[in-house]
Every structure is written in C-alpha cells, then in structure tokens.
Length: 111
View 1 (cartoon, rainbow, N blue to C red):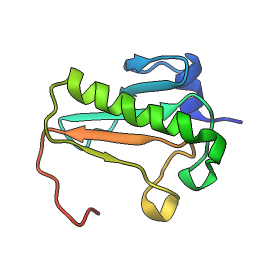
View 2 (cartoon, helix red, strand yellow; view 1 turned 60 degrees about the vertical axis):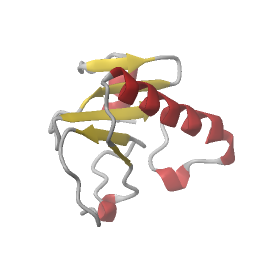
View 3 (cartoon, rainbow, N blue to C red; view 1 turned 30 degrees about the vertical axis):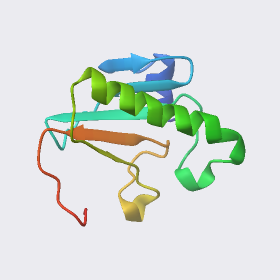
View 4 (cartoon, rainbow, N blue to C red; view 1 turned 90 degrees about the vertical axis):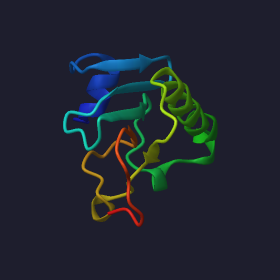
C-alpha cells in the first residue's frame, strides 16, 4: 500500500504535526482552504467512511473528540468539521480524514 497519510502517521513522510496519540494524528493541510485548516486521520488505514466497520466505532468517536480538543486548543468557537466519501464527493486521498476548518465564513450548502 502506498498511502501518503499512512506515511504521515508512521513518520516516514514529514508533515506539520499538530497532534498525535496511539490512534489519531492531526496535521496542517498543505493546501489550506481556511486560515485554520487541519486534517485529522486515524492511524488505522480505512480508505473511506463507508468502509469503516462496527469495530471502528470507538476509533471514529476518538477522532471527533480530538477535533473538539484541537478546536479548544486553537480557541475556535465556530468551525467546520467535514469528511468526503469518494472522489465524487471531493475525497482526494484514499485514507479516511476529517477537515477541521475555521477562521472564515462558510456557506451552506457546501460545495
């Protein structure tokens, strides 16, 4: 498997890490779409959300709690947390990841 996010998670690909623990890694997006734009990934390779299993429930919940922790750490009162599932939805890396963005006005519907 040649997954850039797995490389970031295992340290073989350099990145601007913001957070890491045994299950989750967060780093700055290389092409930010907002003044604050972080990516949160599980260390476990899950290609996309629709490929997660019931066994991943605690891991996925932990990713959300890390997002909360980072929002508090960066003093983000208003932020957007989003994941894309598949190329048609905008997913460009086949490793489940969540975008934590803040610092600008976001429109709805997104996209």
